[in-house]
Amino acid sequence: MISKERLYLSFMELCAIDSEPSGERLMADRLKELLVLQGFTVIEDETAEKIGGNAGNLIARLKGTSRAESILFSCHIDRVTPGIGVKPRIEGDYIISDGTTVLGADDAAGLAAILEAITAINESGLPHAPIELVLTVAEELALTGVKHLDTGQLASRYGFVLDAGGPVGEIVLQAPEQVKFKAVFHGRSAHAGAAPEEGVSAIQIAGVAISRMNLLRIDPESTANIGSISSVGPSNIVPDRCELNGEARSLEPAKLRFQIDALTEAMASSAAEFAGSVDITFLPCYPSYKLAEDSEPVRRAALAAYRIGAPVSFKTTGGGSDANILNNRGLPTVVLSCGYEHAHTNAERISLEQLALLAEWVLAIIDPEVIRL
Ligand SMILES: [Zn+2]
Image (cartoon, rainbow, N blue to C red; front, side):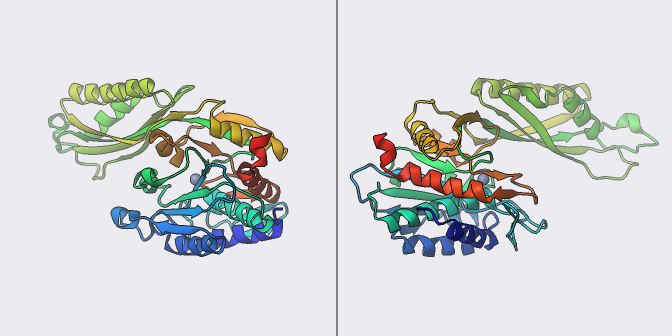
């Protein structure tokens, strides 16, 4: 039922539309057109004004033709930078960019697969459940779009987020909580040659603090990273300010709390020993979630993958997605791997075979026969 040619063309059309975070207007407008053609009613929410972007989240609904209950699919419509002027092309078995931008398969692969599956089901005339789509903006900006979504308006009891690398058939059961932090170390400036003993080096405080931190892979569930350290000044002045930006994640909330305490202790103890000070701000990004293997969306996704002949596997991810927010708001949503590789780099690509299999997976999830098995 899937038309591979139509799918590949539609995927490449979406990749070629400029759609960086908070600049998704062209993508939102084109998706609205494509969805209305397939019989959806589409609402755009007011997220654009709230986040200073030019497009809001799209909530689209297609009436059911069977008595089955509504199911939800979700993708984000933005992509990481550089994501403007993407020139997708088929090379061998893959679709790639020209190497100067990302491809945008994250998350256009999901969008194209959903559109193709729905086009195919409409053509077939097969009965199907009511379908809800949540297409979010600014996902790549710490899930900003979905955080502004009114989930109370959704009719579905559970859903599927198409937004992970890895082979089609792979199902993400668990994702971590993430907290970002910013720390500003304060020292005291002094002449670096004439009177360094009168100074307190903010860079030195930060350096010692970092040496006391447990970073990168902390344990199987937890990670932490310093993303930037900055202090600008000439070499002949003892620096009085240094800023650190970092993050910590864990699948286990208690371990994340411990990690936050340990990071705070490392920074505060160093500042105290040098007679300086530090202001630390922790910013919660998103909560963790864990779905059971026998939960409804996981079983439905696994059965559908089995039915199309894709190897079923379960995994835990270290990254966040819109599912972190949706699950935490009481809407069980499972993340499906979409077959793309090297996401967030200019080497991003997807094989023709995986893209087609992804559309078949969506179709098999929608198809009521899956429920009868
Ligand atoms: Zn993504």
